[in-house]
Amino acid sequence: MSTRSNIIIKDNSCKVYLYRHSDGYPEGAGVDLKKFLEKHEYDKWSGSQLATDLIRFHEPTDYGFKVEDYYPYELTNGIHGDIEYLYVINLIDNTLKCYDVTGFDNPEEDIIKSENLIDIP
Picture (cartoon, one colour):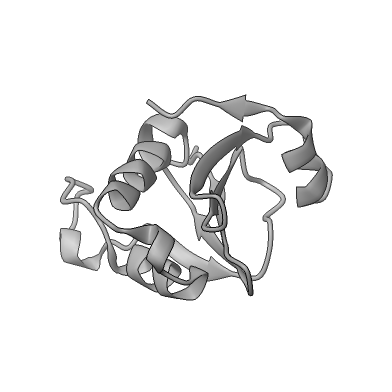
């Protein structure tokens, strides 16, 4: 079964939601996001600019098909009900946080308030 996750990228004027269907755990998506942010001066980007670049960004990996055809992140309109992890990239304070949301049926505000933070390797 796939490990699903959502990513929220927020700045002063917007909040962008992304979805990742597989490898959403901290050792997968978390490491990808850390590497991505290390390559960018993301504090100078808007949330939508960063999301657009993240959707196009991917590390070469063997998924059993052409890597060029694999884009792990997609735009979505909110938090999915079947995710295990929620990542929040906050461009206001330049942070990346990962939340374990297993068992949560609550809105994102409750998840973020929960402080169920997970370390990203």
